[in-house]
Length: 77
Ligand code: SF4
Ligand code: SF4
Image 1 (cartoon, rainbow, N blue to C red):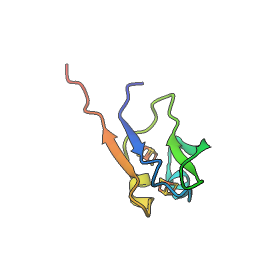
Image 2: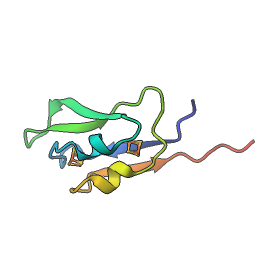
Image 3: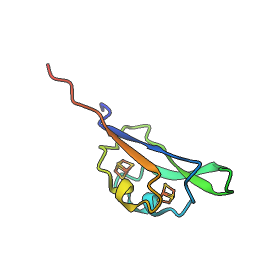
């Protein structure tokens, strides 16, 4: 499937609250195994099947505005 969207998460600012993970309808967000400098397991995108459409639910849920959503323009033939 062609990629429709993806997110970038500012791992330094993430406080690991998990609100974005719970909100994601595609279940493509998870906690990283790694810690950030604040000592939190930050959220990360794991989307090997390109399920993220860039719906931005995670963006609206994040209280710290850590998430940037990208939508990939469809190629026209
Ligand atoms: S944009 Fe939508 S599908 Fe993509 S990670 Fe955020 S909530 Fe999940
Ligand atoms: S909602 Fe924001 S602060 Fe909370 S885990 Fe997700 S990116 Fe981190």
